[in-house]
Length: 241
Image (tube, rainbow, N blue to C red; front, side):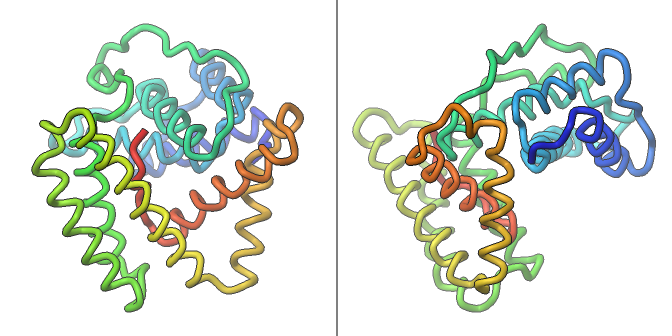
């Protein structure tokens, strides 16, 4: 959110320390340059955190960890999440993104160009279940979550073989369900909460504002606000692009 590179790096280092169960891995030297570049590109802290989380989720699935994770290993996931955020919000990159060479070590399996549709649906179903289990959604969400979950499970069963018009229809349905979920979540916020999130969305887009028209900025702010509403309730982005 307009954070200076040094402060951005410090906050990333603190977050990485928590993800590594308190083991401190310094963001210095080439790692500092890497993370500073994220700040210069305008990557919001929450987006960077989500990319780090994505790497750790995959790392945990491989079993007990053998060594702490360096921030460099999370780069591909951070850039993937940033790409997804930009497409959802409707802004371009501030500079060309160089994903660099494939890393060796525990991050080598993470260098990819985004999840497949089946993998996306699997993550969405899991995140919905986690949001409900964590108690972040009140009773008004129950019917909607049940209906969305049923549709997503059906989509997962066929997603890998969906092609052409059927795939486009599925993607359109995911977008419609996503809109419905966000509308319900926004309605659950107080006026004060919605105002605070709108201010936060505006701040996230600060580094992009100068090269956007007023209409484009307004549209992007709405998209950023939707992302923050999802974060507030722990909801996934259903739309797949």
